[in-house]
Length: 278
Image 1 (cartoon, one colour):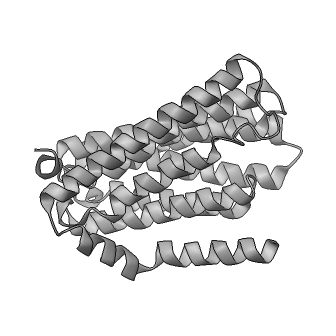
Image 2 (cartoon, rainbow, N blue to C red):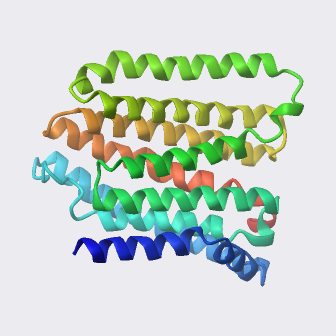
């Protein structure tokens, strides 16, 4: 069974990360502007439906205290992964409807690693490889969202913001999460490294509002999307540090309140919004 899972994982990984597949998806997306707009709206409608479906299911279980404490997402996991995949599909099919072809490619690759991370966590929620995959995705998002920073004249304020966000992330890890994870220091160190990358990702998203490389509407989507990513990962941190019980179930369900909007808003940020939604 382990070999089958590994083979499936390897095949999906190759399909997701193969540049030829990304290029083919983008080429197919250039066929019709109207068709692309319709497809994006259809995908968004399906995502909204799935979000309402698993949110209603999860919070009903929480309200009536009938959730599986060991596996609170047993029934909703597949709907949630579908939201991840559909959000990635938005980036993979941006094509000529992106405001920048190179930016669309950067975002599509980042989302490939997000999908990969969710696949890994579906097999093992505590996998370090899943953490590495998400860390790489956000490292790529940092490079993408802070594009043009070197030419920005007021860099001093930007670097001060970075110190404040990363310093706050580190302080939160030490004060809030270390007491809960001090029995497993290597794991705490891994999560701390990831928290610092997430702090950098939030900083890069906020700088996008000032740098001017992205259209203003796109920069707002980036800032909102990555802020939601940051909040969802705070919830994940509580999930990983809390004992089995309804506090951990609450953290699990709250994660997707932020994670789903994060996926969608950031995915849409690569599009020429005036062209697609005119």
